[in-house]
Amino acid sequence: MRGVARRPEAIPVADGVAPVAGDAQDAGALAELVRGSDAVISALHFDVTADTLLAALRKAGVQRLLVTGGAASLEVAPGQRLFDTPDFPPEWKPIAAGGIAFLESLRQERAIDWTFLSPPAWIEEGPRTGSYRTGGDRLLTDAQGQSRISFADYAIAMVDEYERPQHSRSRFTVAY
Image (tube, rainbow, N blue to C red; front, side, top):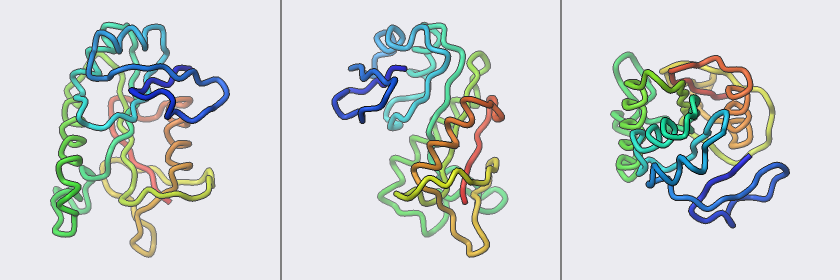
């Protein structure tokens, strides 16, 4: 498995992961780095557009894309996104808007099998429990109204989706 990053030395050491230098803004160069992969799991910031990433996958012949997304586009009530609530932090809006645009571009994609995994409202350090709930386009909350998950369980949810696809050409979310 290859871990592609601008600064590959920042990729944590892990068995079976080969850190590789790459620039996701360059679709042609990225295509060469992902060629031969079964799938690409993207944890890119949304300054890289879906169009750029999809172009790289098309050129490389990779048919599957899994994206670590954002929570801002999740609905908190019918027709109301978290992004549009009064409590959504204004300083997060530029980044969140990029994630919303990325998801909208993916929803137009017909050739590549994509999945967009939105975290809950809070994703934080914590233990891997291996237990989480899944949902669709609605923000998941627990009985106390909390919407959260640990980084470890969010990562496990992505691996679970990679190994046992359930959300082809759609977005899903996870939370405790």
